[in-house]
Length: 292
Image 1 (tube, rainbow, N blue to C red):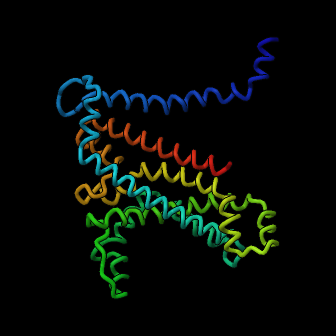
Image 2: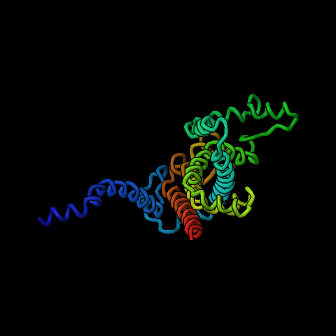
Image 3: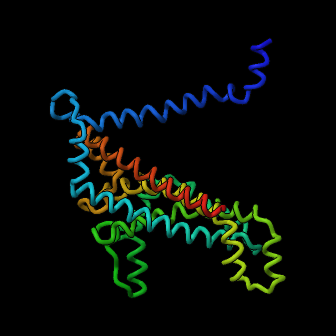
């Protein structure tokens, strides 16, 4: 009788418990394993056995100019990509929230970039950016404008990669914000109109503040993804030319699978994990304050 009552009271916890334990182990084990490796000097090409290095690996890696440059590039790529995606995504959501002819077709076309895989997108954009046969330089030449170097030059490679990321992931923010707009009450907007507020004033002082928690949620999702971006960059440049597009994820990959310095690669990945965690925590606190 006791067991029967216990099961009935805790069914909603007991049923998903095995799945929760499995997911927790799937997440916790890689993090702890990488953290453990970061305190070693494990190098697969040295022929030396794995040994404990303590914080010496952190001191060595975290002060390298190449690592610091990769941190800067990661933030540069993330800040500009997420800012552009948020601005364009919110603007597109506000337009799609209104009734107009062809709205269903516009929503369908909006989904197309999300359907494509990032590697395929990278390959197509490499052809688009090609200095000799690419469509981008052909259009610029037709308009009498100077042609770009795009991903083949250190000064233009990161902005070119940001354009690709914005093209693919702006629709995700649009869809999230559009869902948030659809759930808003009409009463505050109608009250503002009765008080004589213009459409711009309603948008600035009523609609945007009401949907801001949804916008910040979309930003958190994109921030996490953008900081970890790997496939588009690797498919298009591999971190080049030189190290010009080498972000932390690309650097960690190279240390792991090109240089086989597993200890130093783990330090880079732990640093990336902490950066993603702290940035996400900051935006979550901002989101919580916007709801007060």
